[in-house]
Image (tube, rainbow, N blue to C red; front, side):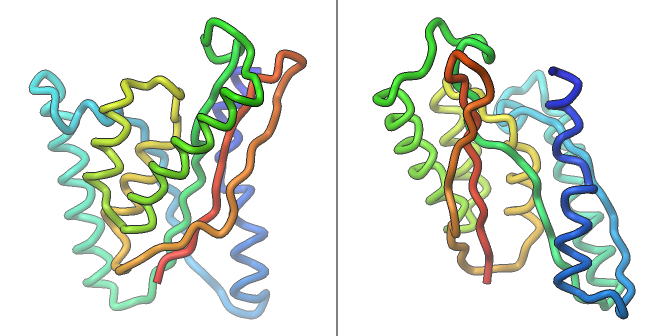
Length: 176
């Protein structure tokens, strides 16, 4: 199960969407980016090297995009909260605990809608990984790279993944 979870965000899920959106006749170039870094690297002096690498990556990629002169579409594939016994919580989620998780997710997603990468990171740091949000690095990079003024959450949902009600939450958003 753990291996399945590690590969579920692969490019294979994004390709059909891109092909449908762009059309079969037009060619596109794809640059998949796999990232994993904690929000703590942005404030923890012992992780300064990681924060510096993230910043360098953002600057280099922005420069490369500008130099290419091409239009770019960013897609981030990232889950939000992981709650329940399967993810190390002490008890199975209840309707009440899921509702509380949903409220927290939606509050966190306000930073995404405002294209506020720093606020998004600070929100997760403040809650100290209570909801086991795994999509931080992909969402953070997206917010740093896109040149949008606003975003809009289009859908928010959850998937129950086992008989103990362990749950993964996710959302889709568009930026303009």
